[in-house]
Amino acid sequence: MPESTIAYYVCAILSFVPALVLHEVAHGFAAYKLGDPTAKKAGRLSLNPLKHIDPFGTVILPLLLMIMNWPIFGYAKPVPYNPGYFKDPRKGDAITGLAGPCANLCLAAAAALLAWALAGVAPLLAQTMPGLYFYYLFLPMFCLINLYLMFFNLIPIPPLDGSSIIALFIPVKYLPKWYSIQQYAFPVFMICVIALPWLIGINPFSWYLDATAGNLADLMLPPGVR
Image 1 (cartoon, rainbow, N blue to C red):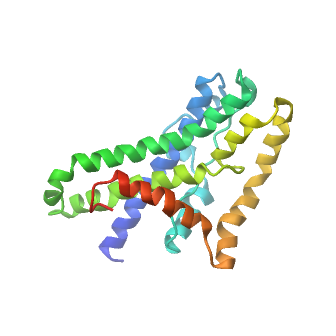
Image 2: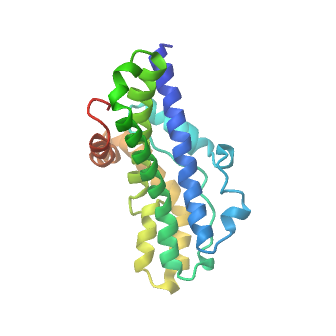
């Protein structure tokens, strides 16, 4: 396997795993600060990736997407939380849901800021293979993958984080029904994300992520980095 291919997969793993872990920890931490101890009791406020890895969503799905040359996204084991602990269940649900995408935006911004800070010494970094891969491969990939995860999860349909916004407009008495629908929405959604584009040969999710995350990454990163 060529060195560049190995470097690509290493950088992808080093970008993707922290992005997913901090995304999930942010959900649990937000819920905890709002009065819900569920995630903390389950040990899901840990930064240990083994606490959060889902075999399919964290490993198999991203590898499939890399092989198919599609935008890389995936998921970890959802952090458990109980809206019943929130003073305002709808608002608490929205804050908890949006905490994950906000964490990914912060991580993407950190990578972009570091890239700008190192822009002046980029020619020196490029003289060594580790420096070359770090600046021109890892930093833009870390930024882009976090933006992919952010925009993917902001799609306002169950079971993605963006669907928590819908809860703001649902009467409280209907929230239990809404949460029960979310529990069964995931298999259907994954069929739409993976199987349907493969069958029809058109991937609207790829277009959406390129138009949102791709263009934002171009704006955030220094010229010539991505």
